Structure formats: C-alpha cells, structure tokens
Image 1: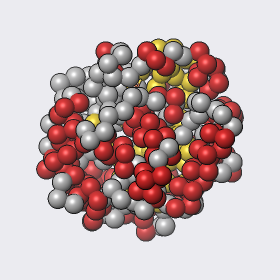
Image 2: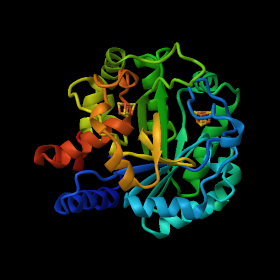
Image 3: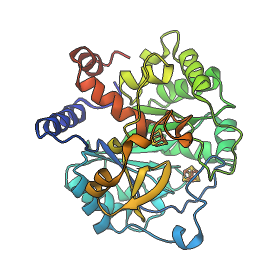
Image 4: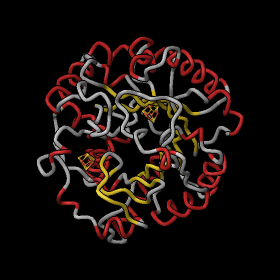
Length: 335
Ligand code: SF4
Ligand code: SF4
C-alpha cells in the first residue's frame, strides 16, 4: 500500500463529509505551483516556456495558505517549476502542515540535499522526486547529465533522515514495458521508496519535444505489459486500484478535473494544470464558472490523449467511495 493508513482514513473521512454536506464539487488534492521557474529545462515540460516576467513571479506564503484554506483540500502537491527555488518554500510547507494538510513537495532533486535541513520528517510531509527512468534515460529526459545520480543520492539521504519519499515517473513513447519495469523495480526494491506515482506524459502544446507523447492505446498496452507477472501487485504504487485499472484499459472513466485543481501565480487554472483556458480568483469561482462538460476525452481535442492522474484519479477515487467492494480493495491494497 502506497498511502499511509492514517492519511487514507483522514482523506476518506473528508470525502464522506463532502458527500454528507451535499457538495458536488470538492478538491482531493490541490496542485500548488508557487512559481514556474526551474533549474532544469526538460524536453517534455510545459511550464518553463512562460515569459521571463512570469517566471520571476512567486505565490506568497499568505496567498498559498489562503488558497488551500478556501478550497478545504486535505492534500497539497507543491510543484512548479522547481519549488525549492522559492525563497519561502519552508514557510509555505510549515503553514500548510500547521493546518493539518498532507503536503507532497515535488522536486527534480537538484537542490534537495542542500535544502533538506529546511524540513523535518512528519506524517504530513513527503518528498516527491521526479525520476523518469534509470541513469541514461532520466538524464536524457531532463537534458542534463548527472541529475539521476543526484536524485538517487538525495533519496538515500532523505530516507536515512527518516523522511517519507515518493517518486513521480512520467513515461513517453520511447519507453517500453521493459524501461517502466526497470525504473519501478529499482525505486521499489533498491531505493525502497515509500510510494511511486506514474503517468503517461501529457502532450503540452508548449513542450519543445512534441514527438514522444503516448496515445491512449499505446499507454494502455505499455502499462498492461509492465504490470503483468505480479509487478503491479508488488510495487508500492500511490494510486487507487481503479486508476491502475484505468491505465491498463480495464476500466474507462470521464475526467473529473475539479478534483485535482491547480493554483499558481495566475490564480485557479481552468480546467486543470495541463491546460489553461483562463483563471479564477477562488476555488468556488472556478467550480461555478467553468463548463466542466466541455472537457475530457471525446469532448476537447486537447484532452484526446490525456490519462493524467489530475483528471482521472479523482474519478477513480469517487467510484471507489461509491462501491463497498472497491473500498475494501483500496483499503487492503489489492492492486
Ligand atoms: S524539472 Fe519539472 S518543472 Fe523543471 S523543467 Fe523539468 S519538468 Fe519542467
Ligand atoms: S482530460 Fe481532464 S485532466 Fe486531462 S487535459 Fe483534459 S481537462 Fe485536463
């Protein structure tokens, strides 16, 4: 099981409270992007192409905490850009943990060892290290030699200090079931990270490399083959069983983009962190002024190949909550 029991119970209770209160739209996790600047320039990135004046902007501690409070989300994933470049990242993390939010701090790990002293191990805190493959594959994806070794060293040091460490791996069309297995086996068995997140890459319009994004059929085939022979069950994947079924094509879902919304220097992004059709000042305004029926596969061309967790994990989690069988399967970690 990739998610600690205490966190699963708290998030389950939050979901039940939303249902009881009759709220039809509520966030599960907020993708907080406190800056778009980064110290790497990955080929598949859709964030660092903003103009310089935008790359210089920062979400303040007060704005970050107020946005999460207003949304009521129980979990926050701090991404970017590279969040460790934010001069007040420590205060943002502390402010959210003080309000009992489960914080995932995403990083490319280049600054992780240098900044590790800013944070303390906590059941409310997890590092999320971006690792797309083993050494050659990862260094190629981030377009800089040596980043894989830095990330591995940082993960080992964080584990030594008692931090919870999750990883996030994005797969492209130059991946295969073999490369997926090689990196997930390494993270699961050698580095012994606490949990792993996986995703087929989303084809950002702004990403410089447009040739390596997977289609839905290719993604399903790749994950089905990678998960076979007991791998899916053995890996500590940080996803619901239904989302993994979705990746394999055993289940299909519609997108629930309001479940994992994004807040950045522009405000609340419409409809999700992958696409930008304008912004709202509050989560309430975002949910009330967005025509959600326009988005998802089969509805918007830009969504055609999307299987991203920000759109489909909330659907899978809600379907899990609505089914006793799926709830039991998720609780006991039957992947
Ligand atoms: S590390 Fe993340 S934010 Fe930075 S360039 Fe790579 S994908 Fe973009
Ligand atoms: S399918 Fe949903 S999550 Fe994916 S790009 Fe479209 S709106 Fe965003």
